[in-house]
Length: 78
Image (cartoon, rainbow, N blue to C red; front, side, top):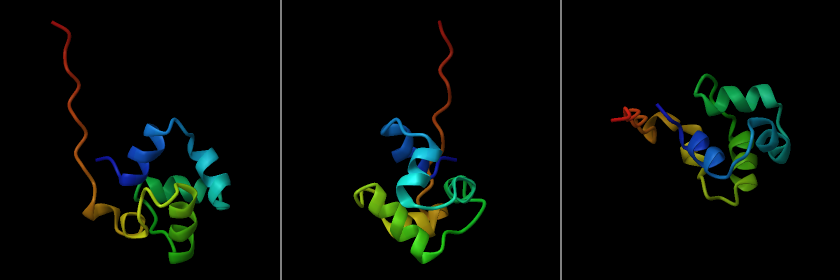
């Protein structure tokens, strides 16, 4: 499953570390939040959303399971 944070970060061509530094949070914490292994605090969600210009909402960060989308299967070459 892909979280909203993963989708937007990859679409922008950013690394997790770049996003974390822009949001002023620990890169390890950001990684866990992005991968839905740790729930963001409201303050962290606010900082992350702000770093993306609110293109991703705090709700999407706080409750990623509600917004996850299945990854598209890789197409085999014919």
